[in-house]
Image (cartoon, rainbow, N blue to C red):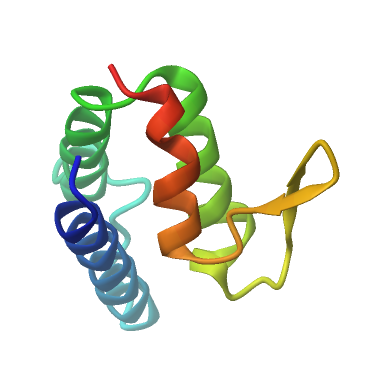
Length: 101
């Protein structure tokens, strides 16, 4: 996946997560909502886009960056043989090229 598409996909997910958070603050629960599985459908679309381009290992790195490192804001640095990787979105994209389908 080209970087511009990868970046846009991650940006859209981040925006969606922020909107879901705001709605949850207003009392709308989309995480545990079986009648309106909007959050779940959003997640399935995101994963389908990733799975068409990356192996499970690549998706694991993307998930780490998003959820454990808060889209790169967590200040965590992943290391590979003592070399820092995935400090920002650009370096994540470069690193996961080895996990292309």
